[in-house]
Structure formats: structure tokens, C-alpha cells
Image 1 (tube, rainbow, N blue to C red):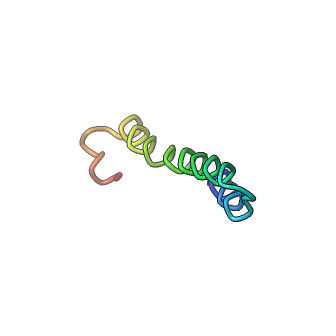
Image 2 (image 1 turned 30 degrees about the vertical axis):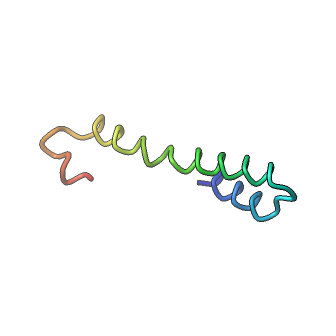
Length: 55
């Protein structure tokens, strides 16, 4: 989330459209990683019986 925040700062200070597009792409890339990996971690750590209460 630190990189996500830093790229948002880059968006605010972008001097041109190319910089804005690159920083928006990278902030989206770093924001989606925890979202997609969390379900895999829950599946690896918790058994099938306790998985419902973990999420």
C-alpha cells in the first residue's frame, strides 16, 4: 500500500498526460495485488471447515 500511495502522489504532481497514465496504471497494479492474493492465503492457511469464519 505504500507504493500505491506514492503513485497517487505522482498522479497529483504529474506534469503531463503520459506521466498521469503511467502512474495510474502502476497504482492500480499495486492496489490489486493484496486483493487477489488474500483469498489464496486464506485457502492455504485455513482448513475447509474453518475457512468460512476466516473470511
